[in-house]
Length: 111
Image: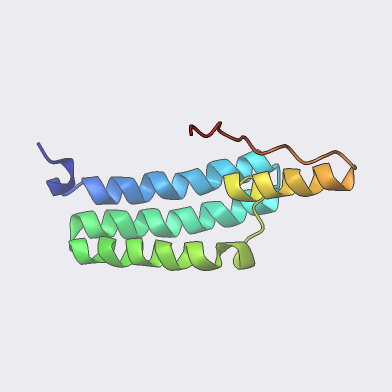
């Protein structure tokens, strides 16, 4: 059984992906970011529902739009709850406090 053949699969993925951005915004603690991400999620969810009801090409366009939005997301919305951003922020804070960088893990090479 291939789930990606079901008409509801990609619209559902679209809604789930959009909801993660709201979750990351909640984790950041910024109400403004939650509002912005919620508006964006609503637009993507509306596109997913419209694509499910009428044409799958709307979902294709929404998925492509999501990729484009990801490319500029950091310039449009400041969301410190995003995992990559949160990791970078914690590294910067650690360095500002004078804490040493975490040592990279190394594997013993077999000779």
